[in-house]
Image: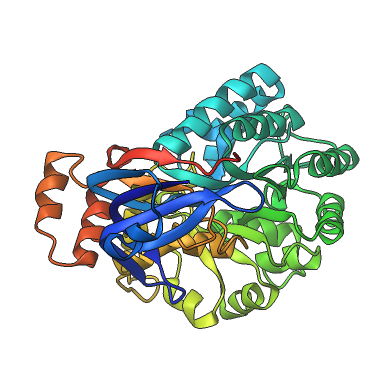
Length: 427
């Protein structure tokens, strides 16, 4: 058992932040021998309850939950920041050529190691990631996450049509490979599997049907894909499924909307789509830096909240422009403020932070497991330095309340804020 004394940020069940200026976080093994939060609260009221427990004092630092990234593409690590005219040209000119290389296990392993290190360097301790259509890409990422004891969910991409040689898979074999990978990796240590059709245009009806059957057979695995990101993409889906009510409804027809189903973007929805998300327990991975970079549109927070479906934040690297959750939260603020195509609103700093920690965990079905520093949560947390840069030091010193402090970190922060990332480990 070990304790840490510092300022502490965590979240209450009503999504509001709880902040201790002088707090104590006590971590130790649970009954499964996993490091979890044993106690958290004011230093003065807790310290005497844990005599003999070593305390690491971190003056001027803030302890915060590790960030949860709900949608990221590890094979696109090397194409972040690549110019394109929009989503579909970007896929053709950069994404698919890059992903072809992941057929080689050695290459996949090298990128996986860099990718996991970059997540941790930026304070991301849980991620839902795309691999490629090559089973070797999945194995490489799981092996590296297992080595680093990261909580990670990923899956082999399914794409048996409208895809170039080198990334296009074969329908029956792709489903066999998916089930084999589920049985090998799902639930091992801190790992989870996600059934992963890339998006409707690149999967045949047979492949989508097979994916839905697997989702029914393995209800505790995740499903991940993309929906309603781009108007050109939506038009393409309409050509392929002219009788479908909407893009989202195609996934519903194949049994791919359910709890633990996560769809990136969810921008161009109507009220029926939003109700379908809510009623099926499906959630959105909001990807603001990607949406701004590719000019896809703006997630409608007000309509999502009115409909009552779940969501959380995602980097969407490499369409997204940064691994940093601070950049993602900043971009989400911009997206919320946009009021020309939807109702504009100002997301509070606490709302933004919650979307990338406890809220994202809740959306993934991992509420109370990760994303918070509540008692019983796995002990994934960050040591943040609010004085990491001269400007941050100057601005945070002038904060009059918690919202001003958090907003300064969101707007001005990046990887330099993250002094240390602590991962829950089996002992």
